[in-house]
Length: 206
Figure (tube, rainbow, N blue to C red):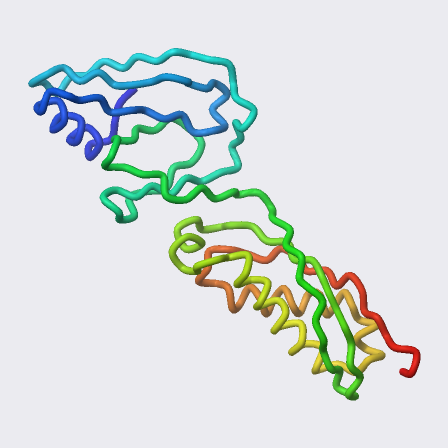
């Protein structure tokens, strides 16, 4: 196994200080899990010997993750499934982002149609992280932000329709909400896949 040039430079620097072990990590999804792995630095040289003890795969092994690594407190790189080298103290896995589809419940809220009918509507939003860097550093809490955005967008879109159109064109309304969310969330590194309005309760006096 070979290290990148930057990581190799760090290994050489550590080797000259004599101490010094740089730990390897196995990212999920590789098929094999490594329970104990380290790189033994040969003092005063740029050579190193890698040793690893193989263990059974852990249940958390999955390829649908991206690990965001910071070096000295600043963004360094994004690790995806595969073998990678991390330097202790220097490198830190700051964020772990799932690349799977995520479902978020949008709480019940009130909305007023174009013909002034008050409705209480809830829904479910499905999104996926497309750019881990932006999802970590572009927004504080992606779930909260996209939920608030969905509520605001839903109120706005329903306000453009009469009650009859809202009830008859629910699918078109869902599509309009998804498009509006994706336009606003472009800098968050997430993409809304679909939105589903679950219920549109209408009072007996309507």
